[in-house]
Length: 343
Image (tube, rainbow, N blue to C red):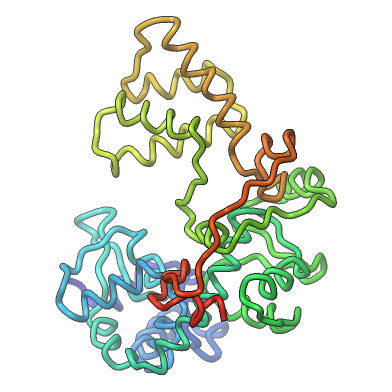
């Protein structure tokens, strides 16, 4: 297997500079490619960079790092399993096995050096904050500073100022679009045209704020607040498209994206044909498309600030199950709620 520097040589200079900034290389903006690679290699082996990664990387990346350091897993991962380490320059794609990533030997050893009780406490605090920000972005798309400050107080009983919030977001290795002039954050894959459309539709509408146990689930980008219509679609995909459940999830997500982006019936049929699906009768086809109306009404929208269209029509408030003080905390820390997010 190649050395880390050989993989870094495949990076563009702009990507090397972004990586250098993330891991704290000083004076990176003036360095040429070879010097950038040298400084990045050195920084990656430092306790400071490892501590930063330990606190900020997502849970899946953290679990992969821990298991590898304990020799409980092979050094072969999917990108989604090591994404946090990938953006830190600790994970690389295996050239002869596209889509498979490995962790460098240096990071494997560094885990044991930074895995202390004190650092773990710090990680829990960072992740609590990051998860609230992620959940907000996945629900609302565009979130004002005032709303974030309100949510920190509501869910964590934490008082945080706008300056403290900005400093925390700026310290994250993840792409979080912070607009200081508009005093808001915006989900990373929203372009300006989409922003203007969504912001206009949001207007001064209230934000959807469920009980904490429900809210924090949205920190997972793969979480879908499924209705019976969503379940019907998922069952259709699992029944009609070849493959196991894990392999079929992207097909389910793609169908949802086609539906929610307003694609025409023919476009959706063409996608199904490309996946080998043919309707046996007009009744079967009509039933499939009739179900789409239920999906549209029961999907949470950025333009509604997290509400479903159906909730706005009926003006009903769904009471979520509250977390008991002695229940496991929904954030996943393993602690009781009263000793974690319910302090």
